Image (cartoon, rainbow, N blue to C red; front, side, top):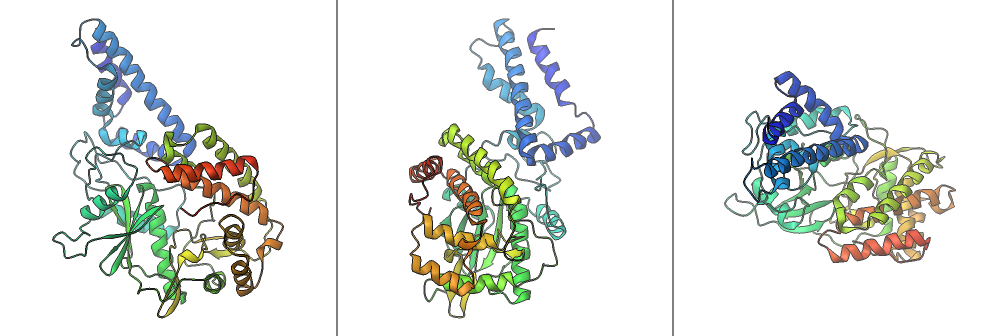
Length: 442
């Protein structure tokens, strides 16, 4: 048997999915591999090693005259592996480019897929209400979306493609032309009387499901907050999409006292009828650094991972001053909208059950790092009724949040010079231990 025959035999042996039962077995383990950061690193290493082995056999085949002279063995190895493993599975492991399927939950394989549709794996933890809604959302989310070969990192153009695929554009569907409001963790658009949030990747679907559940809970509890227009998220082209009622125009800019009053209302709530996760302040660091790719210095990424691990242990050991319970999770005046009926909370995706101090340290950090005037901070502390800076755990939570805020900017670094500059400013100040360097909101 020549090298070409050996290649085909090798990939056939490695596939190991010759029955529906064995395929289901492999996919069940793959769901775990793709959602656990440590297991994912191993899965990616095995995936790449398999491709190198195929490439070596194809190179030998070319040398032996079994392939046409000048054959690109590396490119052909990728093709062989994609055909064998399925284009969807290769995308799920490599995480480069757009998903070739986008048909999770559809019984019909998508164009370009050689097998069953790739399942969308939920995160490792989920409240019971979230799992039920997640299954319903995935089942209704068979909207295909291709990106024409563009990089899968989300930008405004990619987010607009998602809106088009969802039928939420001005072209023929009766919806107003979308207006971009913000581009950060989500792309946020005004579409007629709606606001639509487009998440960066399918891994955020569970969080979107929970945010909608929180919105319903706040409404039932009388907490002034943005209201959902649909009770469940959509999954469109690998991006979670949520619809919200658009708020009336602001009558003024939200101030620190507005935020403090709303936080008091949230902090007075009992536990909701569904499980809230803890405030995993550092949980996004790995994902943000992965999205940054080669746009940030590997040494800086390694430093932030080390800093994350150190602070995670310290945060877990903190003794709170306030009784733990529901928190907003990203308590800043920018997440308050003041309309004709008064202030309301927006951006509910980080609502959690944890130390109430999480919501208060955010403003202390704004004073120290982002140039908030001292008088505004003092007004916030007075309106809330307590100054978190007197708590012995304040420095630990501040350090953890600085770590997360630095890594958060990194995800915007590819293709964005301003983000790279801000990331460098932040990581340098952390490395040098300079608490006074001014950070800029991004």
